[in-house]
Length: 157
Image (tube, rainbow, N blue to C red; front, side):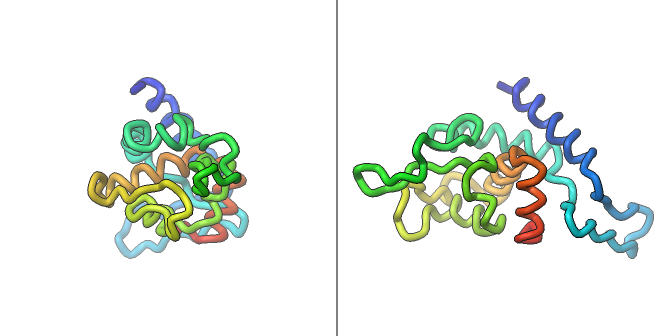
């Protein structure tokens, strides 16, 4: 399990390092400003340690509904007999990337808005840093094109 998380983290790190158009400011001075990413690019994703922590937390707390690879439940767009929606994919193939990071984290913390799904609040089990780590993990699974579109749409918020 840890080996799998390390491999995923290494792939994410390599992908983040190889993104065209991404840049960061030199660490030479506290007054140095960050260079803005090119119009059609996004900054590198979360760091390896955060993604690794998030992967472990996701497997422990989220995979039973959202799947081990964040693929979601089958027929996630179709309400069940009880009227509740199945767990959607979080790996970039669903609609999660349409939402700002803060909204994704708020949904984890407080549960599904409107009671249309089974997502219960995790605020009593996960702290804010753990929720952010989980979010970083599933965002790291998004293809580059989806991540870039999400970043441009939400500016990473």
